[in-house]
Length: 131
Image 1: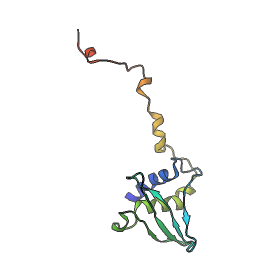
Image 2 (image 1 turned 180 degrees about the vertical axis):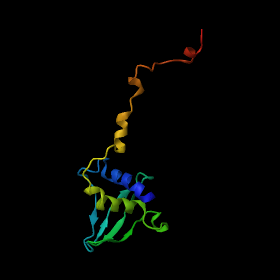
Image 3 (image 1 turned 30 degrees about the horizontal axis):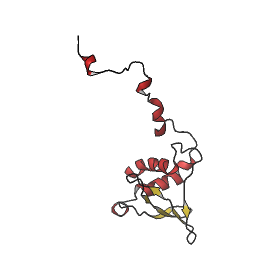
Image 4 (image 1 turned 90 degrees about the vertical axis):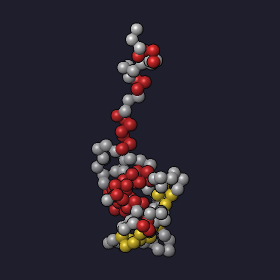
């Protein structure tokens, strides 16, 4: 469940947009020697300069295997968030056409800069003392 919760944010980070229902840049590398293997480089959520390389093996019917070079991959039952994000995006999200009602990137539109509000004014500690 944790991996699926992280999948959406990894996909947004990878494609550099919160609008995943539009045509997005989503970098995928297919192996020349084994065309049923793909590599989906994904940046770490914790270390900005670090990328991991989830590799997914598939058939037309199923995902048959996966591997990732992240430190948590070999300690988990199931798959890491990097693999889950790639599978989630490629098998589900990229086929969705209805725009999300409130992507996380739009929250900034609901915040008003305090400098623009007339209720706020510059004050000093002296203003708090009754004369």
